[in-house]
Image 1 (spheres, helix red, strand yellow):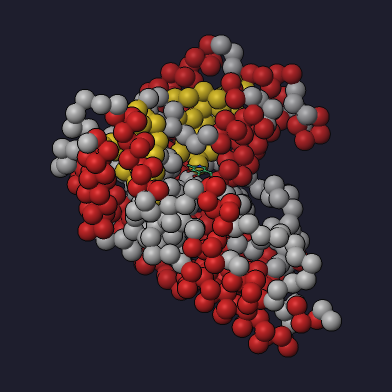
Image 2 (image 1 turned 120 degrees about the horizontal axis):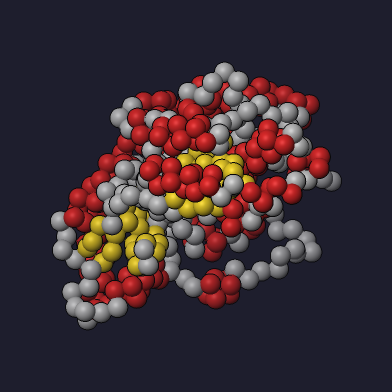
Amino acid sequence: MFETDFLTPTHGAAYRDAVAKAVDTLLAALPSRSYSGKSADELAVLLESKILPTNGTGIEEGLNRLRPLIANSIVLTHPNTIAHLHCPPLIASLAAEVIVSALNQSMDSFDQAPAATVLELAMSRWLCDEAGLPAGSDAIFTSGATQSNFMGLLLARDFCISSRWQWSVQRRGLPPQANRLRFLCSDVAHFTVEKSAAQLGLGTDAVIKVRVDDDYRMIPGELAKSLRRLKDNDLIPAAIVGTAGTTDFGSIDPLAEIASLAREAGAWLHVDAAYGSALLLSRRHRDLLRGFDQADFPNLVNKSLSTTRRFDALKLWLSFQVLGREKFGQMVDRTIGLAAHAAAFIRNSPALELLHNPQYGCVVFRYRPARDSDSDALNSALRQKLFERGVAVIGHTRVRGRQCLKFTCMNPATSEKEIEDLLRQIVEQGRVIEN
Ligand SMILES: Cc1ncc(COP(=O)(O)O)c(C=O)c1O
């Protein structure tokens, strides 16, 4: 009585039908706006349901019940959805997702994922080579950059402690001297550096923030000063974290200079390239990652923090096959071009203020009130109004105590005109609130 509920070669038709129905439901319910504007309370009422019905509904009705969820999701392909590092998925990757979920290989051991293991290993090797890492280097697919940062800093901590004091943290826990270890990163590095320090038993006080320049890149001279101060105080720089593509500004730290200071100080170099690694595929902008190849990454016996793991590498593999290198690079370049276009428009708009010269796809700016008013509250209200009215999903961040707006250009299909229209709408909305 259960056999028709699982995918076997003889149940291909039922599977194809279910996937087709899912895609049809999705496309029919996808809203045309970036967001419906509904509040959390309104959504709770709309989505109220019996979580586990006594008897199932069948696929058609089950999918029907998803309509309000789809209709009240953020539409990532809408040109006015431009808030976060949150990209619209490629169609090739969606197709791969169907296969990844159906095969449900488990990436922890060969006998649970033979062909997938071989393909993922080949991709890991290719990624190391592409990044210019040396022959002994290795890679693993993680769930995201929170895990990658944690893993990099875990390796740095354990390497530092074992090389200085011949002490195995894995076996003996942290030695008493571990309270001398420090991680250094820029003022605008991702908060997961501090989170990792907390989780690694060093505490967030072990993170030293290094000042950034006007375009939010770590200043090597300031890093050198921080390293000297640590030395004078008998503290140990266990790791330096360079960021290739900061969350708010897309800024790329001067990795080559940071790498040579790390080497001099005997510190591990970790690069958070959650955003910036895509630049490897850009012919025009790849140079921004100069020094990336000097990041530390050793062989691991047990390579992942996870045990069972999805075969996400397939999504990247299929997208690479379908699109090819040239097109991937052009898509990255296009998002950079859109950010540059937005920045130029903002520079020429008296009602807007640009906070940096974008290097990558992020643009941080402010609405400048015509009259003397609380500009922080006005910028917040402006963004909220556009969200609630379903006009746009734009980002916000605090920079040096001031409330700012943010575009993160992740959609190469957006046009320059759409960017300009959105900026005009922002100005209009600002004026409406002011009056
Ligand atoms: C620079 C940077 N590092 C790390 C992270 C965390 O990544 P994830 O959400 O994939 O864990 C982010 C998230 O936006 C990020 O921008």
